Length: 246
Ligand code: ADP
Image 1 (cartoon, rainbow, N blue to C red):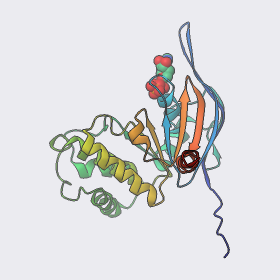
Image 2: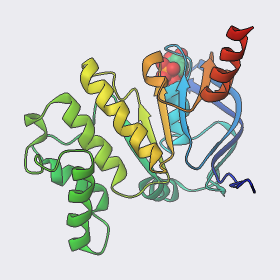
Image 3: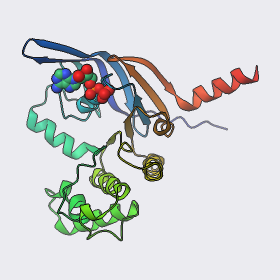
């Protein structure tokens, strides 16, 4: 039987990525030269204790901030030398964000929140259809006309996921997505992220919680701005099972 080998398609390639914050005379070195790749279809959890640099890294990878030095290619495109406008355009087209604090517009309906990233699309009719479609896919087809202050925290996060998805982004970043939720809603959100990954979406989860990271296929652990571990969850489980059998 021939074995099918699928060539990995790189989405994110970083080399010697460093970040230094300078506030007046205070210099804070946060990322100390990180190098790694993330391929299309991966579900990666970036883990580490508070203050280890996870958010800083996510902001750089999500094109919300720039590295101080190092290389960063998004879908093989060098983003280091892009202008602020070019970065913003790329971010809108290629990246979806889900934040701990939902970041939805209040006094605006669920449907309008999800249509927002599509405002610049030419085809107005398709915007409506697409927004309804993604909201339905996260189980919110019955909440389209609710205001975001009239729905639960779990539902708010599902709106945020729909908004992140609506542009068909190349990668979805979820920064502590269950941090403000009760455990039942948290489990639902992780299940949705897992289903999105099963459907081929690339997901990067930033978390300090072990139970949320368990949904990922690969874990990158950082501490004090350095990678201290980077492993496939499946391979490590197999290796551990092997150890236990000895
Ligand atoms: P994490 O997300 O892992 O909790 P962060 O990336 O938020 O960590 O922060 C890592 C370190 O960088 C912390 O010591 C934090 O104080 C520092 N830091 C983050 N943003 C800034 C900033 N704008 N100016 C100075 N220091 C910062």
